[in-house]
Image (cartoon, rainbow, N blue to C red; front, top):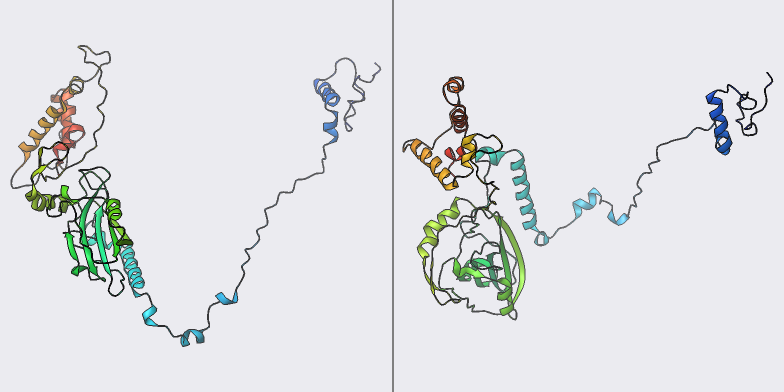
Length: 384
């Protein structure tokens, strides 16, 4: 049977002989597809270069160029040996402070503080007045404030004044006039870390400060606002120095309230209402008030099966549950031993109790022995 050229004969691939002349009938699918492609995408086949190979190379990394200035070159050994340094111009304090920080970091790195004292050791006690040092000109006068911007519980946007000295001659802090005696930092329990700031003012002349309530030593009488104080005396004082540290609650704060501030509780006249207000110096404790969990209405027969003891505890008053745990804790206390301690081998009779006790009672006993859930306060004193 003679072969005739296809209707797509003028659109063919250069290397394909079968595409030039193909029979009209029984034409294979591959050849038909190639003809179709060459008809509508003719130029795509002529663009292919089978000898082309992509060259993918790593980018060239050029070295950084540095400009060497002769003035910044290191001096020779002879110049170093012959140099003369005035000792009065050397900043000895900065070198000494750097050495202290270096020793402290080395001791922390090798775990000396943790092994010799305790993991939570803090080596900057602030119970006693600190040693304040600064550079001062001859014949100058200074005012020193120690204030806590985070510790005032009586007034918003106010500070707690811990210490105030004025008319300090030069840098002799011990010779200054005491406006407010020193009170140790009192970061209240549950309020996190407080910022304790030292502010130094330079005086133009000797000043006699008059602070409201300076004759009383109560905590509410130490309310202070630095901006108002500076605005009042801005003609005679100038801020010259600032330093601060962070403090957090420890047992000394509780002892300060019990031994020192508890003796200052008295009656005060409230200016807003004109009534006498009894101010008690007990230590306040702050806790986060979690939102009450959602409890659906109680049903006689709940739709979802639940353990009856857990279901009933949802609708009990939390104080009743805490009272029940506290009674158990007090029944286990002894004047000759510490508080209740978890057993070294809790639930040692797990198998026997599982066979003799109901399932819900056995589960409660396991939680009680392990101190899980509401039984956690059985072995931990939450008041401490």
